[in-house]
Amino acid sequence: MSLSRRGFISSVSAGRSGPASVALIAARGREAAVGESWPYDYQAAPAARTGNQIRISSNENPLGPGKTAVDALLGNFGQYGRYPFNSRPLDVEFEAAIGKKFNVKRENVVLGAGSGEILRNAVRAFTSGSKALVTGTCSFENCPRTAEQIGSPVKLVALDSKLRLDLDGMAAAAKGAGLVFFCNPNNPTATVHGASAVAEFVKKIRQTSPDTAILIDEAYFDYVTDPSYATAVPLAMENPNVFVTRTFSKAYGMAGLRAGYAIGQPETIKKLARFKMPYNVSVPTQTAAVASLGDQPHIDAERKRNTEVRDFTVKAFESWGYKPTASQGNFIFVDLRRPAKAFRDACAANGVMIGRDFPPYEKTHSRISIGTMEEMQKAVDVFKRVLTTATTTAERGR
Ligand SMILES: Cc1ncc(COP(=O)(O)O)c(C=O)c1O
Image (cartoon, rainbow, N blue to C red; front, side):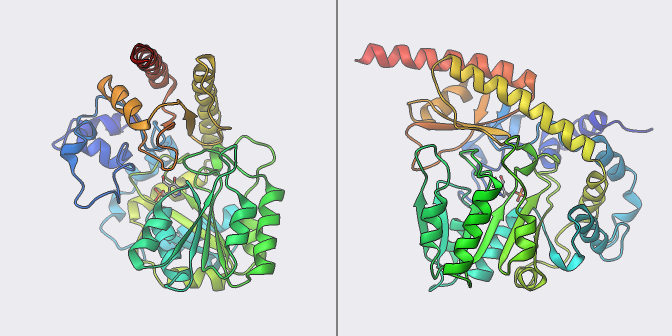
């Protein structure tokens, strides 16, 4: 029997491990928990196990992998008993497929079990007790968390008034630092810097602090619609110690399959590869990833879908008087003039799970990932109800 994409997901869900298996494949809803505490307390987030909620808390693709990827995955079971260096496709074929997409060689590519692995490895490779990490506050937490674990100092640079990363401030802080983490689009604020600002930033740091490595995280690249934006891969190819990271977890819909990569000059890539676990990407994952690299129309359609739903969600908040930042990801960051926890808990009580706290904005801003249109229509009804109720209560208290 041939299995359709939806059929595959639901047949796994109907199997012996129930909804947890769906979560394993699509991995919706755990990003918020990973690294927060260990062992992770599932009791503290029972909703993560039930699968009935609208889960827009972890910047995932609500539809999962595309048909091309799923068909390849289902058709290649015969290879899954092999190591990734002994299988079809091979890990080197996966690297070559990425190289082909960017017109670079295999030596310019290092694989990760998600780009999160590469972010961690970058902190290990380029920072130390005397070589700081520079990052924005707030930005994606993986790098500062790793720096803290290994005892590297962290220099936090505040965002500008539009909640964009302050590139001048970060470039100034980079002098003598080991690594700059530049998240573009930035998670959680969803803002981007255009190609010329990125080039200027790299040039400045290369002049003032040439030994400092620069990690440009493009996890949300495929969701950007701002025409001034472009990939920094050419900059990474031209400059030593500059590299770009990408992931299959977002537009490619494979958060549960775990694949990411970095691109840079061979010497830079070698420094990252020293910390990589051998065979870190599984054969099923590389099967799906290689197939999906050949299906750009699917990614274009996913961007279009996300843009429509993002616009719908942004307009809803704006119509109620709340202004999200200029959103370029599959999530929005919105000033609700109330603590994120209060809003999150109220939404959760109504079956809608939204993002975690993002200090120093946790007293005012919430991050909401973009689900399907159907999910967001339901979520928007809940948001409206919660915001109205909360306002009424606050007004009563005055
Ligand atoms: C900016 C950014 N970079 C990297 C990652 C890591 O993603 P993954 O390890 O799934 O590739 C995430 C995940 O949410 C992210 O938001």
